Image (cartoon, rainbow, N blue to C red; front, side):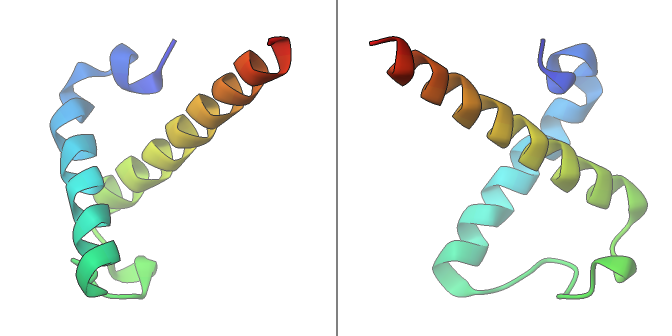
Length: 68
């Protein structure tokens, strides 16, 4: 089960992180700067969780491809 599903209050922040990721890809801008030690701790946690969930989704996709 997704960490986000277990913590629904994180959903809005994860959505914001994913939106900011798209902004970064398009413009190179980072919301709190390049030094993650300067980020609000909750933002850092959400970015980390979003990456973990993205990796889990990619692993699941690979497993499905291997079964074909």
